[in-house]
Image (cartoon, rainbow, N blue to C red; front, side, top):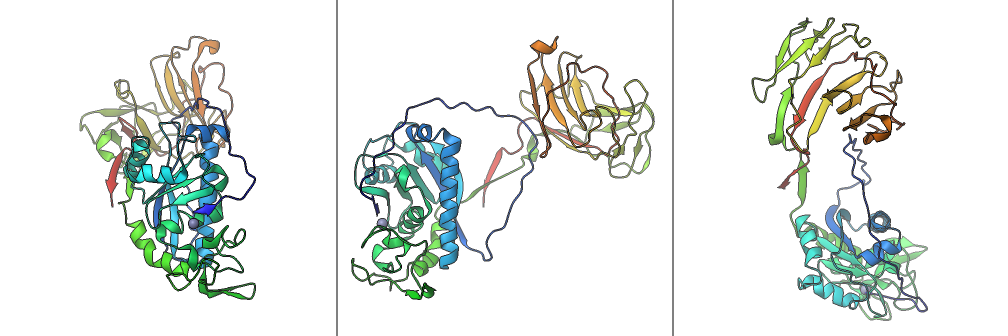
Length: 430
Ligand SMILES: [Zn+2]
């Protein structure tokens, strides 16, 4: 537990509905490696109640605050040689408004006991394979910034306690078994935060570390001698693998079993005149047909020359009704632009100009911009429900007033894969 500093009023906030719009889009995932060593990584579920989320402007802000605090905790681990790391595995807004329902110790006990107030939080943690579960919520007055099991899975934070040192103390320290008494007094280390007079530096005790001329060997505090030789970092390093293994990590992967059409265009390099067909490898029967002139197989794709609509330039015709029977689809295309064509189409599913789903390789002839757009029942520009989004990180601009007159040509190598639902739908355990 971290004691609350004096003179602080609890946060309050109104309850507001949170609206989100999910856009189906193309996603580029970037990953960064930040550790110079392999730490044992524990998965954390961050939960909060709607009163807290509303008080900070919504769930997005609540999640960013938590992510920053966890990043700070990981920095403390790194500099302290603790050998542990925490990864946020998910966020969850509690089903119930828990504002001042009980103390933070009460919140922890409710989670640990699968109390009816918090079954949804524990379930959310289990569903994500979370090794640690925390709740951010204003409790009844209990004199604490936060409370955590020592050791254990659960912790609870007052919103004012959601910052790096307190997070490291509670779910980063106590949950791994750390005791206050193994902290170092001067300079003050994390596990003595707010004990024996005031705050703390962002370090766990570790006798191999010297800070400001002082060796961070703990066990000398006003609380008495610690049970672990004054070394919180060693205890964390000894326990972090067990903490990380407490619940099986859940990972997601593409569910290729949902693929309903696949054209790979791996034919031997040759011309592909009008009427050339390519068989869908899933059904074994559906044919994509080359229309127009100038297409050729490259050995790993189909190259089409590009040209204005009506010019007779080659394009690929898919069978009718290929996506219309599905409520949700994922379409994956591998394509490379090799020339700039006016409003070049990568794909265009339609039954006329009023209903279509289209992806362009360029906006006008600007290859730095693409557009994904769906129009349903749009007889006029004013009545068109339209969703446009950028792909990769390129810019978003308003859609044109009419879809007519677009160039058909798109010089490319194409691979096309259609799935009947979002592909990131299968979960497996490692
Ligand atoms: Zn404590």
